[in-house]
Image 1 (cartoon, rainbow, N blue to C red):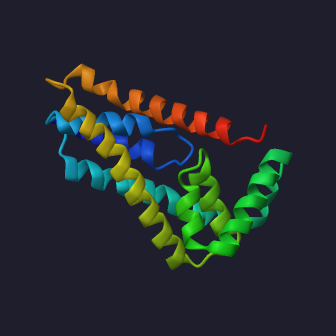
Image 2: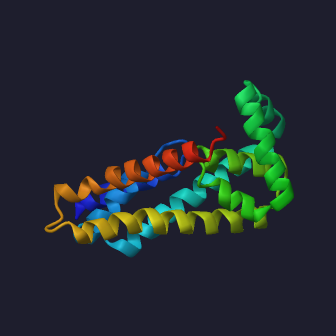
Image 3: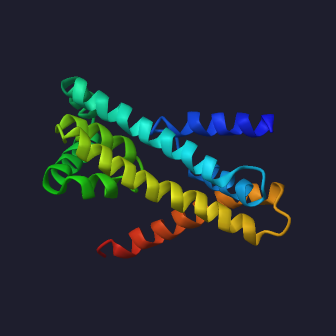
Length: 183
């Protein structure tokens, strides 16, 4: 039980900062929940709380230090372009764009800080953050949980489900991107 508490605390710590890739870890935690090592509702609640708190912190940085954040994000042509693209989408579409950008690599942090910079109202950002994180947490933990139920006996093999799912999703995404590029 004590090791489970440590794992819950670790999961909270790695889900708050938006720049830490954690999908494989979360899917692995879902597999552990399927094996009975973790409580699924508690796991989902802790991860959801961590991701929303992290989103709100980054949004707050964008609101409070928008000038500094814009300067920092404009340090390279690629970052400037990403900031301009994200700003345009958030100003044009609001909540749906914050939700959508969450699922682009690096989009969680960029979307939150940009929403703060462009002064998206707090309640609208909170709604977007909650909705996008509910979708993300449900899908990520759910895939791990499903995989954990499909692996007989769970155990260490179940921990490989997270990285396997992440590699599969990344591979499919890469193939789709390559197919969509003009020749």
